[in-house]
Length: 90
Image (cartoon, rainbow, N blue to C red; front, side, top):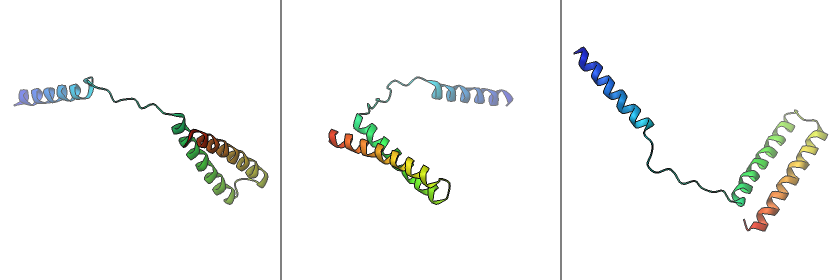
């Protein structure tokens, strides 16, 4: 009985290791990002940063001049991104 348990556990372990570490025959296709995809992602990041900045300003974490400077910087970056997206047709 003890030998059967050891043999069963050994075979199960070998099967698990083979399943986990066996090389796959076909790999997933790599999707190339276009410039427009990058700009869409960057736009979302800038918008998230603007939302966070507004929230933290309302919570009293930023003085007025720092808030205005950072907001202007983020809005300028968003305008550049949107302009480039328009020129690319997106």
